[in-house]
Image (cartoon, rainbow, N blue to C red; front, side, top):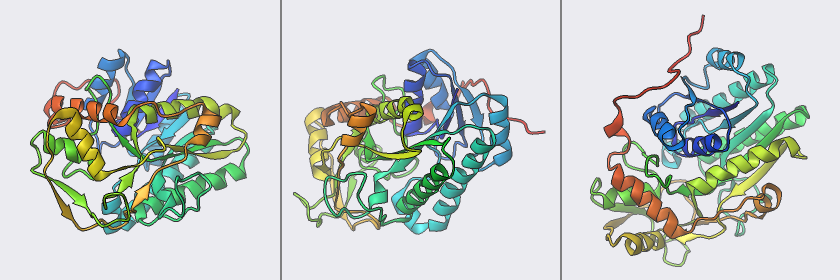
Amino acid sequence: MILVTGGCGYIGSHTVVCLLEAGYEVIIIDNLVNSTEVVLTKIKKITGKEVVFYKEDVCNKQALRAIFTKHKIDAVLHFAGLKAVGESCAKPLLYYANNLNATMILLEVMQEMNCYQLIFSSSATVYGEPQQLPLSETHVIAPTNPYGSSKAMQEQILLDMGASNALWKIALLRYFNPIGAHQSGLIGEAPSGIPNNLMPYVTQVAVGKLAKLSIFGNDYQTLDGTGVRDYIHVMDLAQGHLAALDKLPKQSQATRAYNLGTGYGYSVLQVINFFTQETSIEIPYQVVDRRDGDVASCYCDAQRAKNELNWQAKYKMLDMIKDSWRWQSLNPDGYSCSKQNVHTRFKSINID
């Protein structure tokens, strides 16, 4: 069985779909702080399969230990954690306490239960300000915000764990900018409040939920002054986890990092123009101050993932936009309109 922490979240839920379709049995643990168990019914509708679900926090060691005791867990995909760059700058202690504690407690329990295979949800933010582009896995680790620092610290913990015991097999997957949604339109990105990421911000403006898009700075040293990012379809990202999971038992190093991105960078204004091209919807926007911790350009060299995992991104920008818009137009309020009639096999775990 595969344990997926944060499996009701955006990337986690899409990865769970891929795991189920590939024949894996899946357990999800999620505290639902930034997600909803409505996702579970959507996953079942897509795949025809159920997952075992525990509404728990990874930081609850007693509950986590009980889950490992109840189930034979072969590997863990660790998505759980806070992830907003701007919020991390305002609340750094919250990010360090939550993200580091969750990973350390998970590792302690995994070690106790002799489960040594882990795929960690990392981020391109660990690189900080690029010294050269595209970014390869050998680039210096120098994050510019607390969120990125929390990911870099967790990576270091995982490197140390791998060095301490040859039984560990750990993949560090450094995501670039996931967008898009499952082609069914049943699951997608559903941020609470004002979105932190570009695409859900654009689609919420397009659907009329928000009045205009805020562009955070137009004075970067880029082709049009707006930030450039490597956008990757969430389903490509999900498939990257399956490729890493398949590779883990054969991985020569205890801990290995992989970039998951397309290798191409698009500016904010280019993405807006692509969206209008695909949907014929004009997106009104305003330019506001830069956000703390943002960099001008960030796109990857994904050759290592291609060579070692036999993985590469397949979807193009217009595919990502089409799937993002399908999700948003079918679900203008995200999952909030579907909170009734939720059925799960396990909603919580009772600890004696």
